[in-house]
Image (cartoon, rainbow, N blue to C red; front, top):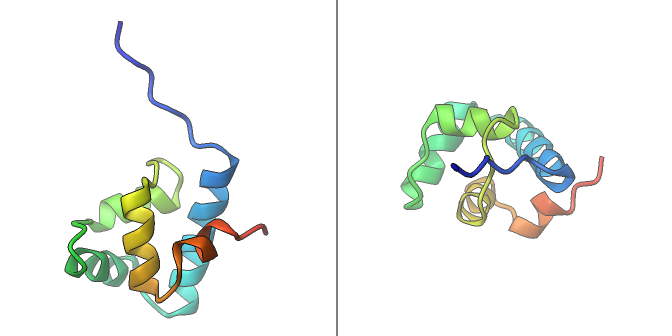
Length: 83
């Protein structure tokens, strides 16, 4: 029997929102952020980033670290968002 995909929990939802807020606050389009993440050595397409932000794709720890660095933040800053 195939495994069912893991759902995105409350922390994942808040982190996705924090990524979107941080990206827009810095004036980055999704394409720009995806390119910055890729330049850091973590290949990411605009589709992957869009799915993370829309909570259709889980953001794994490697994605989180690369996105945070590309945004000039610590990963904890994206995890600590509460609103």
